[in-house]
Length: 92
Image 1 (cartoon, rainbow, N blue to C red):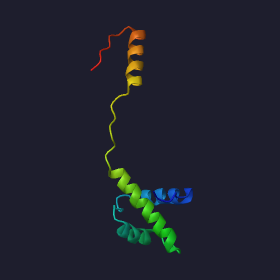
Image 2 (tube, rainbow, N blue to C red):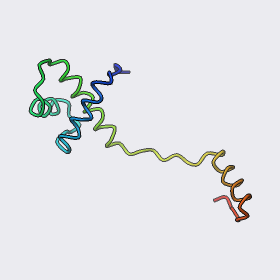
Image 3 (cartoon, rainbow, N blue to C red):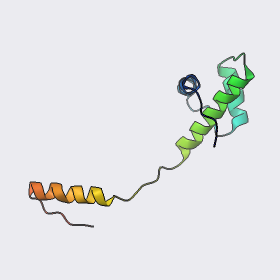
């Protein structure tokens, strides 16, 4: 479990990601170098925290989103709506 990032770090990282669209990769070291070129930081620690957050965000975006099967509640609600509208509904 990692540290919780402050809102300023997250918002700055998202802004930098928008500016450097397509430049950042899933490698922390390369992201530090790219970040140093885009924005001059006085603090190495802040640069590293932002580079780490950007790396994590890029990895999260590249992962496929899991597709969950419909829940029983959703199926029941669909059946109720079909009954109200008079349309036939069959379970697949």
